[in-house]
Image (cartoon, rainbow, N blue to C red; front, side, top):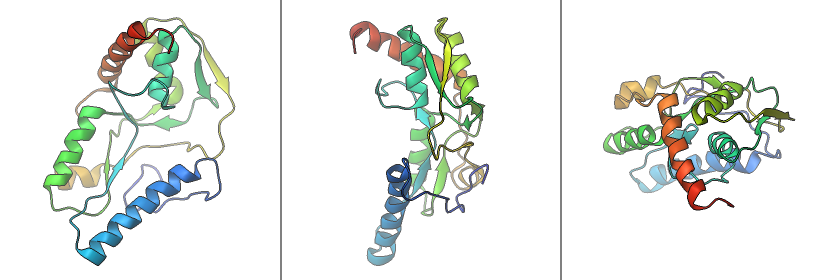
Length: 191
């Protein structure tokens, strides 16, 4: 389903390489809703989409930090597949603002928080190269199995229930994230 609505229950390979990640999120939502039903616990369920920003770990394996760190270290940027798969990228400040709004609301069903701007992975790699001013190459490696082709949240419900609108443009958020990683790499050049 694209964009992804909160009503979408998912299509998960329970034994694939991403299954712990995919099924872990589903199990967490199940437990939260069970506690709400059984014990009356005041709960919220937020579905987070590709958050990035300063203070990310260099080696967390996410595409934004991977590309930035590779570029700043003068390495080739690794794109899996042909790079046509799409993602949306939510700056951390927008995510935090959305979560705070959700916590202050009475809404308790799953709700998407993210940014509904959509970019191909190749577009992201090119943006990182442009913003870092580096001339690293983009190399392609095989696409991992079960890697989603498209990931973009439908934010209709968040707009309605929380008045949530992501504010940080991706290029500006990337520039702030690049600035952060530049300082980290200067401090720890061999990490």
